[in-house]
Length: 296
Image (cartoon, rainbow, N blue to C red; front, side, top):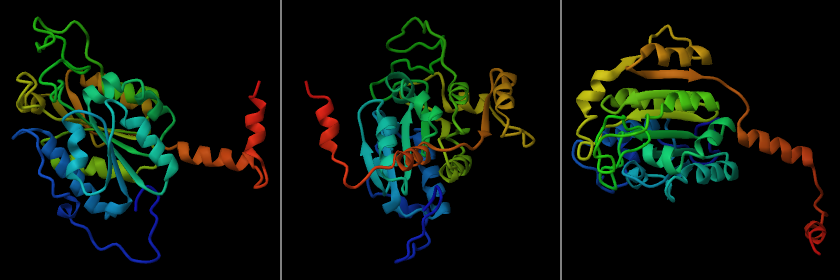
């Protein structure tokens, strides 16, 4: 397994290949969708870590990118719109021995699900969140999203947007994510490397992937994303939060790709387990006494 690997004492896991994680369900994304590159990266990352599919849980919300669990051999939960985060938190706290992977998009994660993201980061839930950002709502056919550029015209903003786009990397750094990275979906190798690093990381790992929508976003195309990405320098200090933020501002209109920040602090499941130990308790304790305290 991963995230503090637990090795079975019964049957050893055979060496896994990327194709071993294919569910057999054919992806329904449009031809040319950036999410294919992300899916390939997920397969490769899992194979390199030799993660047992029976120890993997993939949770998603609603949207094109949230269809990813259908194409992955694992336990999976296709939840309500924007609610993948809290569901995944429950899974991780109930079964900290499992690898928990969340997949979703910019609309699902930062619009209706935006209220959950700060708490995933600040509580340092031990899971990996892969967010595919196409700057549009694709599944509902072309509305502007929280990351859409202000001048971009969409079905809901025919004269252009009226809001500034949010900056997800700064957002996650500010709220305390302990692993923050970004990639372009056209580079499946980098996607795999960063997702692998996120799965290995003990804590909340956020991987932001720029993933163009070929059907409903005719502005932020693959060529557009290729033109704005810029590799993070090898000498960048990933342990320095302020340098990570400064690098984003320094890049100005360019999007940094690579590992931006990594740090370590206790995870939510470890803290909760410690609280349970401190609280003690007795097998003879009667829960009805607590209930009786609330009776009129």
